[in-house]
Length: 439
Image (tube, rainbow, N blue to C red; front, side, top):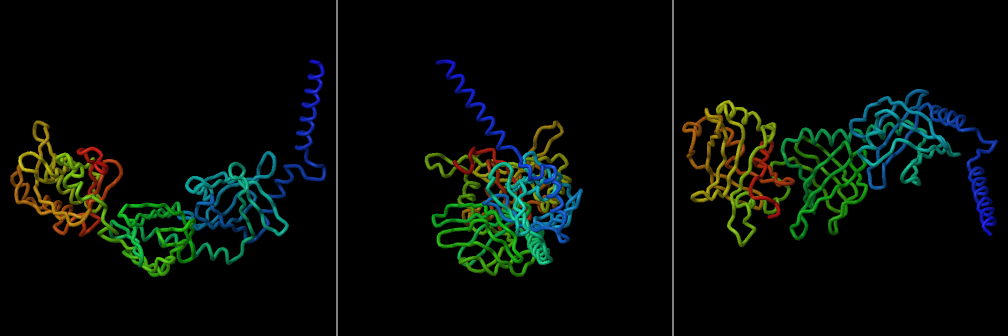
């Protein structure tokens, strides 16, 4: 009986091996892999005007338009992805182990899409009877198909028009005259943040219950706008595309935004809407703990990079006025004696011990993130420091009488942003209370 089982097992193994062997045999009528690779490379090289395709790394990413002209040892490419708008040269190869593969093997737009937008840079090649080439992923998501077709002059024009959109958005972001970018439409307002190098917009808005909601939307460039990979939905509002009009350093016109109406993206010194409870937490720290007394708010600049580039000259002037100055500390609702608010310049004395130059102020809360400070004409240490023009200039820049916006950041961080010129701001690390945004 044992021998019978051994025979049956051997028959099964032999038949399985024969089946695998037969499945991997290339028919004699079909060229071998090396010949196919040569044929496919010649096919890629043949069109005078090159090839064109619309490529999205995954179903949830925006599309990138890519033009390619193949040669024996290189490929010239142009795309509408920001920073890859000019024609650039990469190497490629038609390789593969089982069937021909198109592989882009030096840094190029394909590499960047793989890094940032869920794409790949290796594809199986499937020539079609209609003259197109189907590209398919080799590894994950193998059923996705991308149509590579012979390019024409109109395709290059399409890419150029999309490049204008990409460049315009990047320039608007770079040249903005204020800290806040606000999307203002007829039926909704949101904060606007954009990463043109990855084609993603982050929108943050206030829902009907005054909760703050954020969503990242991947997009494709259009000739005069952007199209979201998935629509932006807020209640009955549905936006698939934003179509742009005129642009200045402070405002980008929106002529169409789904059923949300027309509007603009503006560079502004005040936010699209107040940050919930930010001002009160800044003034009274843990005042939301109704069974506890508020504790002192203590925040400090980590280093000189904690001030904005526009504020840096004012900061440097204070360092010249106080040569031992090394950081700023903010104390609000300080319970020593009567609760007071102050900003302090921390320096060193001859014994290398800390010295604090305090400047006191009152804080009036206007809305949930907007505060107006009023200085008291006194300081404890330093004597004439309060009258130093560079010290006064810094204080008036970071705490202007017109007010400041308190901007929550992640963790124990926040920014104090001037509402007169929002390019003037400082970032504070909060020491107390702990869990500043959730206590």
